[in-house]
Every structure is written in C-alpha cells, then in structure tokens.
Length: 200
Length: 321
Image 1 (cartoon, rainbow over the protein chains, first blue to last red):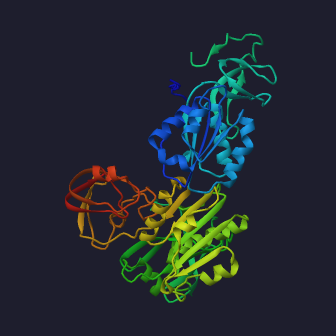
Image 2 (image 1 turned 180 degrees about the vertical axis):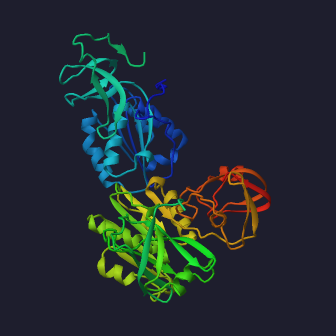
Image 3 (image 1 turned 135 degrees about the horizontal axis):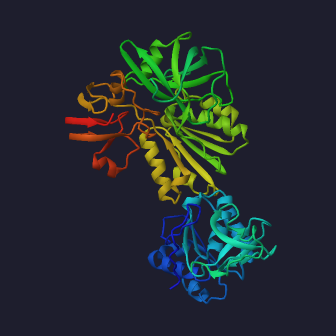
C-alpha cells in the first residue's frame, strides 16, 4: 500500500486528504509515481469524471501508465519529469475556466508545486484536493543559500547547492512549495547528528 | 454605549432623490475632519432617533472609498419594513445631525481574484458602486450584471454604463430581460470570483447554480442584510444583568437589550457577522432563528441565538447577557 500516516505537526505543515469526485465542467488531475493509484481509486468512485478529465502524469520509474490509459480520460499526458510537464501544466491552467476541479496525487513535492502553480493562476488553495501517495521524501529549501533539494529522504541532509548540513523543518512555504532546511551545526561546526530516515 | 464600533458624529450634507424609490444621503463629519477610509463592500450602521424609538440599521457605503470628505449611502424606501427606510426618506433632511458607526466590511473583494464577476439585483447595487470605484483605481478587471425592475427604477444604471460601457450589463425585468446565468458562469477565466447582492431569491439562485457548476465556495461571495422581522412579543431573562425584559412586536431582541441599557455586542445587525452570538442558558419554547451565522446543527441544538434578527416563541428564555 502506498499510503502513509503523517504524524501530527505544526499548522504550517500541509495535510492531505482522499480524492473525492466533485461536480465540475472539467477535471484537471496531476500525479506522480504511486499517485496513479489515487487516480485509479478516484475513477472507481467517479467514472463520470473521466470523459472530462485531463491527466498529467509523471511515472518516476513506476508502471501505472497503461492502467491510467485504460481509464480513457479525455487527455492523458505522460511526462519524464516535473520540469518536462511544466509547460503542459501552465498551458492547462491558462486555458482553464471556473468550474474546473483540480486533483493532485503523489509525492509532497509534486502536490506542492502544482498547488503553487494553481494558486498563482488564481485558484483558491483550499479548493484544491490532494492525496499523498508513495515516497515520503520532501522538497526542501536551504534557508541559507535558497537552493532547493528535491526528494530529501533523511534528516539531517547535505544541501545539494551549498553543502551545509541541514535540519528538515515542518515549516512549509506555499509560495515556494518547499519545507525549510536550517543549518544544524552553525554553533558547533562538524557536530552533526547521524542522518536518519524521515519519520523514524 | 461601547458595543459595535466607534461612532462618527456627522451632519447630513445633502439628501438627493435618485429616483422615486431611492434617496442618497451624504454625511460629513461635524468636527470638519476626514472620514475614515473603507474598502468597497463596507457598511455603516445608521442611528435613527425617531421619537421614543431608536433604530440602528446597516447600509452599504456607495461613495468612492478614496474620498475622505464624506460617506454616502443610498436607501430604497421600503413601505412594509419596520420603518427605518421610511424615517430616512420622510424625516431626514440636509443639516440634520446624526450618528454613524465606523465602516465595517463583511462583503469585501478578494484581491487575489483575477477577475471580479458581480451580480446585482435592485438596491443590491450599492456595495458594488464602491467596489467598482476601488477596482477601477487599481486597474482591476470586473464585469457587472445588474438586474433592475424598469428603466425608471434602474438606480445608477446610466451612470455605470456611461463610465464602464464595456463592463456593465443591465437587465430590465419589465422588458423580460434576464441574466443568462449558466452561460455567464461557463467560460469565466480561472481565478474569477463571483459576488452577488440582491433579494434572497436571487442570492440563492446564483450561489446554488455556481456551486452546482463546480465553482468553489471560496470564490463565491454574497451579502444579504436581513432586516429584523416583527413577530409575537416575548419575554427574555438576562442572567448576568439580572433583568427580565420584554421584546415588542416590532422590536428586535438586540434593540430591546439596548433599550434596557444592556451593552450587547453587534456589528452588522443583519444576521451575518456573528458578533452578537449569545448563549442560551435555559429555554422552554421554540426559537425562530433567522440568521445566516449559526449552522443548522447549532440552530437545532438551541444553545445559541443571534438577537439581532432571531426571535423566540414560548414560555421562558434565559440568555447569558
């Protein structure tokens, strides 16, 4: 099973739900990796969505594409990476009208970045549905050099831009779609606790 | 009295007859100072001393929010109401001294919107007049669809159309012109927010249609001031004040509290803002809940009441006030 129960945390930390079929003129669905399972579940409860659905999917090495295709959505776009999917996503949002429903599923990095794009396009944040599936790795911004490291799975970790040892906070920025990483050994350089898997 | 907001001592500078049903009132400060700023959609509560009766009614501000020299409201004469609009129409004249509350906004624009789609019915146009001035000053994007009874009663319609010919659409009831709501909602760009102000039937129709077309609640805004309605007189006991008072047939419970010298909180006096929410300690009888604030569960539960618009029928009512 690809579901994970996140421990309760501060208000800043995003929380995710379970995708529900809603009435809408169109349905924009964006998912990565095991997020496909959430879309497959959604199609079970709301098969009427699919003829009006535009799915943008990033497999990240998983094998769900054929099953998504079998749902016969109005449009299905498979992208090799989130960066590669960005022009498609921007165009879909630019062309979208009120009455569209937005469904996001998969990793926190994907959900956060699409949510950021949708909010920037003017859609209310709290009206966007999201369901976490698959990897619990996070997208983290180094508060010192501002560089973003994708798929951070351990705490602390080494900033991929400036090399500082960063402690992963639950403090989240919707504006940049990333958690904050703060230098853990600023006062005693070199005193770095051993890296642990997140949530262990 | 400290309830509500700070007060403004004003003079009526001008009373202008807009059409046979609507009068516009311009207020300036008695001390010659500037009026407070406000945002489009804000209202003031106007205190009306009519003999022994004191009425406090909310009216939307319709003047330019940037104009600090005055505040203006436009009031439609309501023959069957409890008399607030009749008092303004018949008794208030230029030079009179009155008291207003500071502006309060329960119907503000969502400035994150990419476009503001406004639907007005009748005198429901008033908050939009201020909002359109605000949006225009910010180079914002809006579209107004305004339903009126007839050309003669199309309050400010000519003015709006002259200033914004591309963005204002007027519909005359007597010419069978109707807003084609479904077509209007279809094809609005992402980030459009919808605003509706008018009669209850229109608000329900617009809100329900938008939601059933997939518009998120967050992007649908409405304002309806409920005037308190008359009903059977009843008695209410105020536990903290140690008083038992009578609410008259044409009086709201809030007005009765004020008449008894009890400083009860309020802002909108129209069942919308939640400020006057009051705990019910004991009751034996039936509530007549008329507000937009309490949830259906809270209303069914019977431990809260909004004294600005709601009433009670029965033997005993004890509230925490």
